[in-house]
Image (cartoon, rainbow, N blue to C red; front, side, top):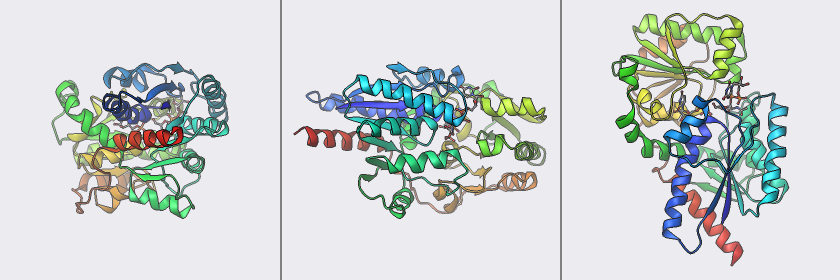
Length: 368
Ligand code: UD1
Ligand code: UDP
């Protein structure tokens, strides 16, 4: 089987890691018909802290193609990716194209492949926020509707697809980000010095991340969230550590906003992030991945949005949606407690293995 993986943004490098391990494992078990993997990096993220560090620290292979698309408007970025991915796909004889999550790299990869009649596999299919103003929601809906394999992390995702009439090719496999946590958290604990480096005491600090367009591109919302983080530090007597996404840093600088009592740091590697998450008293975030990781580590989460795709984290009591009101952010964060329900909706940590197994079986069936 010849498989093309398309990635480009930070969370996709993390989702890719367990898939590459599963391919390695599959090839050891099936030396007669191995999976040949071609890695395409669109270049959506390019700063070392947003891209290179994940390849280095997670031991990922170098991309076979680096398309160097970079930043731009949605149309420019998605269009350039579409053109350049198509060129790669036309060069190779490919059985499957695999795309991850909900970024512009996801949609461009899926669209380029499906127009060339190459089957598309979508990892993290079926997630919905039901908010069409989010670029990610458009990317998810469109990608799911042109995918042939829909690898769902949760039962909710399977039901969302059913409601849109998608039942063929749907596989409930669990969450690849849970695979990643199981595969890297221990290594992270051994290697990371981030707590010592930042002089943080376990359970005496809060961890914050903010990068969603709906929060960063609206000056009032961004200012209110920053005020909320400052109030958490003041009222909760907690250090608030804020590894800042470049998009957010840029907006804060352009708008001349102040962040006084919050500890702003550069984005951290995936060998530091799980440690920061695990030992935080509370996590405040608008990230999809970070909400889930808070749940994996059973750390209370305060989500700086009005809705979430990861509804199970809320239903189990581990996550609270607070939007951007500073008073509410501080109150909920300071009072945050452990969840109540003890269900585990994200599978057993073998999602990647199931994904590669299903695709290999399919290709064998076609070639028989
Ligand atoms: C993208 C995804 C989002 C995902 C996030 C993960 C889309 C529409 N959005 O958002 O779903 O949650 O990645 O982090 O695909 N920038 C840099 N250096 C970089 C990358 C970006 O400075 O290495 C700055 C640029 O100013 C750029 C801005 O960040 O314009 C936004 O980057 P972009 O990739 O368009 O979107 P993200 O906000 O990163
Ligand atoms: N992450 C990281 N360093 C950081 C911030 C996030 O390694 O400074 C990891 C985080 O642990 C999670 C993923 O990046 O695995 C989430 O990516 P992001 O928040 O950028 O995107 P989203 O999940 O919202 O699409």
